[in-house]
Length: 60
Image 1: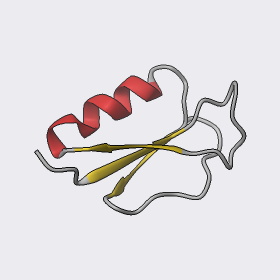
Image 2: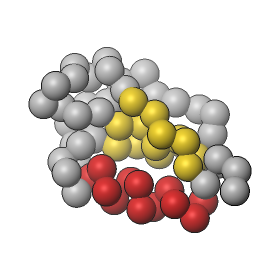
Image 3: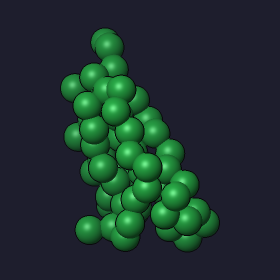
Image 4: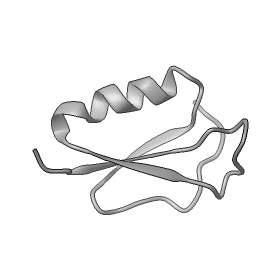
C-alpha cells in the first residue's frame, strides 16, 4: 500500500498551534487514523500526500 494522504495533527495539551505532527496513510487506513486522533480531542486535518498544513487550531 502506498501513502496517498497526510494526517496532520497535534496534541493541544503539550503543543502550540504551530507544532503539527504528520502521519502518512493509505486510503484504507486514513479514516481510522483521523477518527482515532479526533476521538482523543486532537485537532486533525487530512491533506492529499504530500501536502501538509502550517498550523492547527482547536479540535472540532
